[in-house]
Image (tube, rainbow, N blue to C red; front, side, top):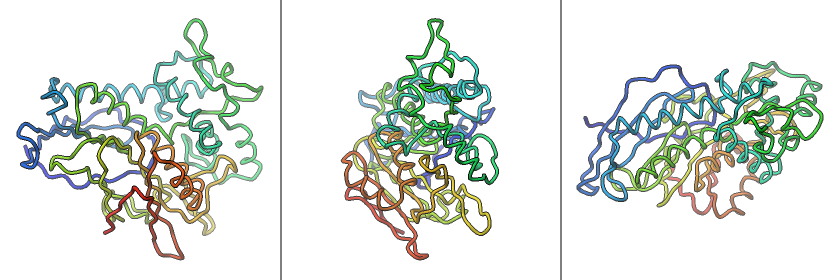
Length: 369
């Protein structure tokens, strides 16, 4: 079966509960005359993290044709996504993370320990701006695992005091007991209550990277992994760079690809590509907009004019983390970050007195529409 695909569009960074059932397998073979004679691109898709995922790959790999059949590749991708959901989804009430946040003893798996280490690393790298232990703040404002109400100043101060990776040990593996179990109190480095963990800022990028790691292990060289955020490498079925549509950050623009600001064509090599924005998850109270980007230093939603940040990095998790960072710090500090990091490129869309404007770093070429 042949099918033409619209440009895949970057989605906002929200880690939702995975659906209970998976749709029927969709495996679509695409053949392009501009590719090599043995190139055979397929797409596998299913449900993941409250939405759908799509993995496009060339079955002609580094060393010839990829051996597993498409059905087997899908089964493995589904298994990876299922493992992630059962480990670190805050919307899956039976996940290790949900049980750990509830104060239960858990037996952590490698995903649970690995993403915690990354979370702590990003906390240090960003001076606390990317803080996976700030779940109480997101819950308080209604953007976390529970529905909150508009909080009082006292409630914000209380939640702020109960948050922060600086209250936890740097490596959660050090707190695992001899029987393999983990208790929250053993992770704390102070005498307070354990802050809940929320990996929304990095979980979808992390998921993309794990799937890509699996595909690399098969010898895949051309791929695009879309699980809400994107990882890509190699070329598309036309033998050209992968094309990523970036949505126009209009409040309420929830239809992916309906209104696009421009198109980014990924350079050669591996790239994580992530957009974070304040135009899909927000609410209005007393005429003022409160968006889901919360500054863990103040405990409050940000109020600057940066509307969206699209970041590229060598992996999707890093792009995910720094897209969040940019949306917290605002336009000027985001520009400074991108100017100081050779491993990051980005496109910032901001409001200039009611007019959308874009700023792109040197290595990020946006074809505006």
